[in-house]
Image 1 (tube, one colour):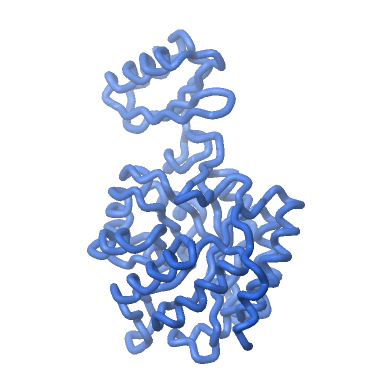
Image 2 (cartoon, one colour):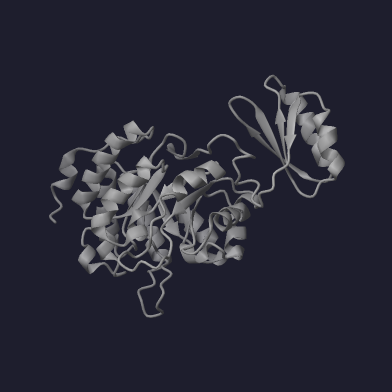
Length: 353
């Protein structure tokens, strides 16, 4: 359940309410909003606790919550969560753009792509060092060496970095190199991994499982939040349906639905969501129009020869740059804005499609 305080309640009084809750053997999570404070109660409380709290000075209401995900729920945290990493804000009115290749291949490849992502106005460099693949003979990534390559490219060009982590054992090493850790669709319910991610403070981009319901998705996020890591982003990356023309079916309705159910930032992945280059641009725009807090887009300088074989869904650098220009204009119409200035257009002059 949650305790909603009155507008003029003091910090001292909030502390007394929290102490009363904790004496009952349950946890209290305080969320301070613009108008009032919400205190979430985690654990099995005695029925009498609600009545006692209602009678306390400074308490406006006590509401029971039936959702299995408490910390991820907007009931517990009415205001949007905004995650700030080295000056880049993700959530609320901010539009975060993550761009880069499916996988890190060489130092030269990731350095050039980082340069182009920065030039287009992106804030975050994406790239996989460890790649979960359906087939055991497919390219699996180059490992820790790739993490170091991407971290260096990010530092050189002033970009944050995001990379996928696949096992609990690699969480700590990935935290050393990356600013954001990504949990892929196949690992959304890898509960050992989620628990480990709850013990670190590095922000996590949690991708929706390709057969997961909203409830299952938010409960997966709850594992990380319950472990003590509040920096979680939700990513809609397409679900599996009967349609075979596209790689997946990008569920655009998930964006407003998740934002109504949860306070966590919602990111859209139109690259995996469609699997087709010509669909990435319109679905990116549709995602922003639907209210997405950010996009994670594949971009490659030579997608035809991508080592992962996913080049068909990767944008060329000029397509990526043009898309971001249009998204900047679209964002103004739907209350989303970029936070980083774009570099001169000369950055693109050395790249030949």
